[in-house]
Image (cartoon, rainbow, N blue to C red; front, top):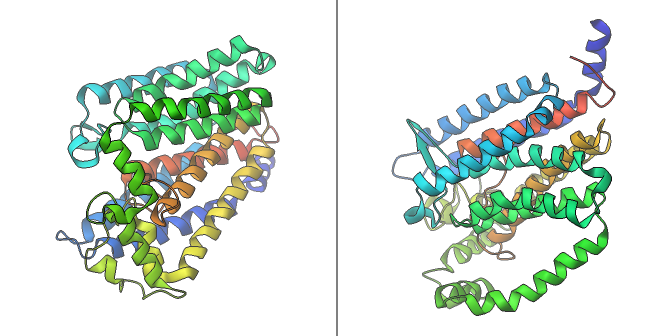
Amino acid sequence: MSKIDKKFWKRFDFTLVATVLVLSVFGVIIVRSATMSLAEGSSRYVNRQLLSMFLGIVIMIFLIFIDYEIYGNFYIPIYVVCNLMLVAVLLFGFGESQWGARSWIEIGPITFQPSEVVKFGLIISLAKFIDKNKAELNSPLTLLKILAFAGFPIVLIMLQPDFGTSMVFIFFIMVMLFISGLDMKYFLIFIAIGIIMVPILAMTLDDYQINRIQVFLDPSLDPQGAGYQVIQSKIAIGSGLVYGRGLFQGVQNQYGFLPAKETDFIFAVIGEELGFFGGMFLIFLYAFLMYRLIKIAKNALDMFGSLIVVGITAMMFFHIFENIGMTIGLTPVTGIPLPFISYGGTFMLINMISIGLALSVAVKREGLEF
């Protein structure tokens, strides 16, 4: 047993865990700042974020000691449950009036966003599906099966409709296929189809959707409407300059000019109150997180484990890039939260679970048995 323990602690990625903990604590502090000016105060938000963080840490530690290959044995049930959850959202979900998409579901006292859970489930299911078909991955028929397998939940999410979350799925699916060794010609075909579809889709857009695109390119066209969020976010980040206005001292934040500041636009709070250095500190933590995950994926024992970590890494990268990008006007506003920072219990738990699964892959990369 002592020999196994030594192997375990040798392969346990303490730096990854430390990075996640620093990010999470940093997130709680920023959530408190972002919610201080709200009528209900910050206590409820901070307490829920702390509860989600501690529960996530417990689950993360628990998952480390479970052989990740067990999940591969149940990839079909996991896939079925994920799709049933998305169907349930279409039938019983809510959120259209608040967030423009029917993305939430309520079970007793628990309210959550099933698509966040499905990200995790699909990464596991798709990783196993690709692993089982890796010998014939570049066969057109096999690729069609994989795309159908991965695409069905995306269609269900698009029907909510939740374009931002759909893009997260498409991104990590493409990265997983690329790492699996899919021939580059298929990616060129995907790109060509995308280029062809752009003008076709453009002709189907209504006036409201065209207006949203125009406002993304120039938020000043609708400063009190669709462009308001980005304009206020840019003002907040720009006013932070190098060192920031000071924690809990942001004008845009504390006086309520910044919308969705505890969730989608929380990076603007960081930019205003902690300045360039605060933003770069967060980006550095994320870069280090990506590095540790990539290292685990590279040294994984098998393709299944490697693809799981690749999917997790791609998912988090897209969230980070899109969220920060939309706060500074580089990407469209899609409602994508910032990992470990944005307020949200479901999102925090899924991020912690993902790290726990990655750590499970890490400790078994030399065949360690539990």
